[in-house]
Image (tube, rainbow, N blue to C red):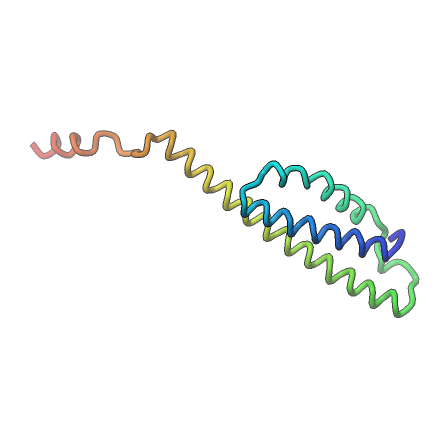
Length: 120
């Protein structure tokens, strides 16, 4: 990585963005959620394009910091997965609501009349 401290700083910013995303999703504030995506993608791009910290010759202190780096990246991954689950749940709810609206509230056509005519 170009600078381990810079990476840790950017991971901290990513953690804040992921937490903010979660709150915005819970509040259904999709405009603000959408506005965060560019900054999140910039941070992810920085982290993805950085060198692998295991291939750099480092001292013991840097290795300890790399453990911190790894732990914090795993935390970011977990937060991202949590947000993804919430997005999927919201999309599922929206799809169900749309399906209900398309079906007119009752997908059973003429159930009363159909049963009445069938028994005569």
